[in-house]
Amino acid sequence: MSATPARPSPVPRPTPAAPLEAAPPPLFAKVDALLKQGKSAEAISLAYRSTEDDVRRAFGLKLPKQWTHRELLERYLRPDMGLLVTLLPQLYAKYEPVRYGSGPPPSGDGVMELLRKIYAEPSLRRLSWTIGADSTLTSRPAAARAPAPRPAGDSG
Image 1: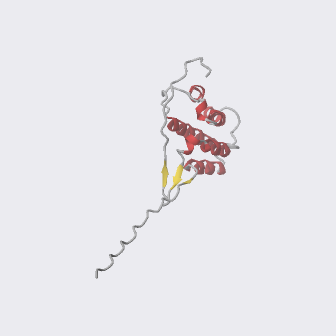
Image 2: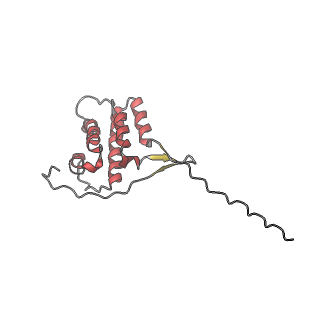
Image 3: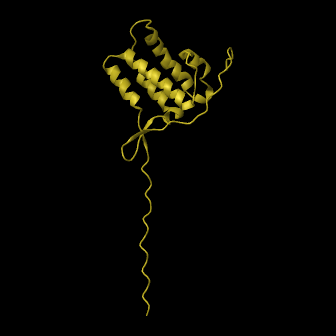
């Protein structure tokens, strides 16, 4: 009599990776801390400069060094950028008096709300930090193409 062949041991199925949980960019904590310390000018400056850098990275924008912030806002913001077309100029409106020192000391009112709206946009969500299953922070830059600048006088 022949022995019944032994069943092979079951092969363990791979377990799916834990989903990544979206986390606010580290910028949020820095800006919020500065606001709480009463350093609203520093907070606004950090918020705008960092956000502008992230917009450039998210859309692959390569701008000439001599370009001003206004030229970026006027020539490179375009409809496929979603709400960034209106939100980034709103943040710039808070930044401009800080940059040029015009007017009364700035208020940090609304800065965190603007940052939350800006970083909720899909293009910047891809840049935001994520927490993996092992609790490490990683950033995920988005790949994008750079647009051709609009000719002077072209309204869009």
